[in-house]
Image (cartoon, rainbow, N blue to C red):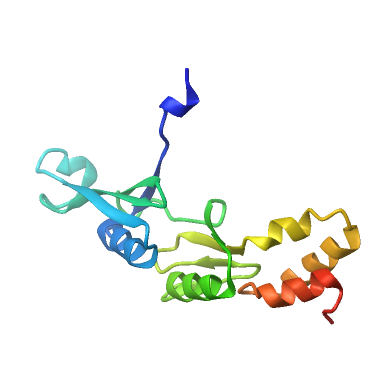
Length: 167
């Protein structure tokens, strides 16, 4: 089996908001698009309980990653055990994604947030991985101490901590 021949698709279970969520994500990520929408028919109503013609699934893509939003009902909820990381090169990117993804949702700590649908995201500065993997353990410890006190990441503050200039 060739791994490259397989494609993974992430399925996100919503109550009734799959189409709204797909459009929300497509409005935030410039490299996103909404695709095919399927609808519930009359068949299976006794099992799924959805009105004929209502949205069943929505295909969408973000940065080349395939997703399907499924309107499956209120049976399952999102939690932080699964999250999507958005790697940002600049503070402007962090601020932009943080503001848009957290709108109507809930801000967390260390770059984590929940969007208005309950999906967990991590808005992460790309330089953080380099700082944490540095050969100087004191530098990575200072960075860790600094980011553990943050909600939204501040790249300049992380760099000051890395260099030993942060309080």
